[in-house]
Length: 173
Ligand SMILES: [Zn+2]
Image (tube, rainbow, N blue to C red; front, top):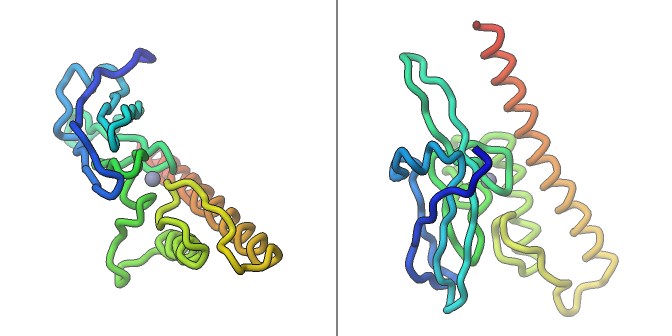
């Protein structure tokens, strides 16, 4: 491992379009690499994302492959490309319906609510924007601080969750 993944081309994209990549579409060579690069042209400019792969042992033998989301500690079967970013659906706010909302979904929703209020594009994978015109700096700084804290909690939450899963797995060995 450690080498660059083999490249995949995803043609041309418009900023607003979303392309999904399923882990199942990778071939054995790409999986063996431990990482994969996605290359495409976004509004005429070349873009490239290198994503690390993870694997877990299946219950009945064999291994299952995952993408490691570049923005949060999730392991996912599907990644999305949009607006020059590459992330999981949670980071792009392509979320679950609210009836099966978890604590973490609520944090994602809170983060996106702040983004929407500030006129930033929804999704924590997108860059942070500027202060909206007419908003007081004090209000803006307070909202930005809440936003940063929420994003930290999203990431912290995931780490705790992964630790829990890993310790359970160790306990069952
Ligand atoms: Zn993510």
